[in-house]
Image 1: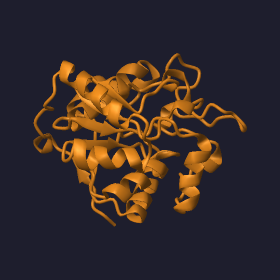
Image 2: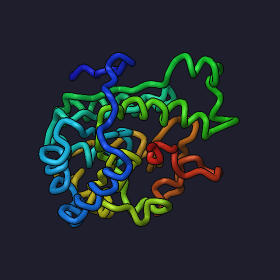
Image 3: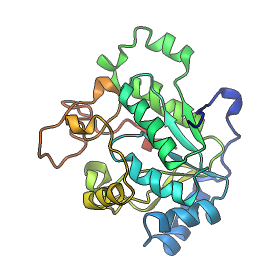
Image 4: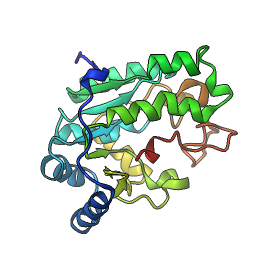
Length: 250
């Protein structure tokens, strides 16, 4: 089993190199050259040419995560992959992560956890999700990712347009403040994801068979009704919330 690298404060790199204006101009240039690409065809030039050494990836190791992880592994198995261990994840997600890391030969997993002092101050009993879900997401996901992204100019995400909501018009390449976000699977359909799983014999998340179609933290993830077309219907079900906030980082 490949050892996981738990990020510490002293491991965090220095800040990114672009201004807001430079990032906007860079996206326009990249879109003109690569905007029609997707999948590995988009990942390869981003990793090896455009942002060599300054690009990372985030992965939840959820139900669809193996698709992008497999494509990335084929391009560069040593690409830094940030995994946010919120301390509220399903045990099955940790097991699944270890299984995928071994099967795909991933060698550079960066585990980022919440700041323990902030948790003690703002969520001492671990129940903040019940009273202020937005603040809970910030403490356990957004702030840790802000630290983990320091030193990178770009990051790969597994978001897709078919997830709907704010992702309907998701571009392949976009600005994220002073960084650039690459969405190699933006135009993929559910059947495209299934093809990647089938052709590479990828295992499914163990909770998917139990009705969990999109998996995040345990308290805020529910099963969905059979036959639903909204794969994110079980995330913050019954609340006026559809995103944890990490994709608003600037």
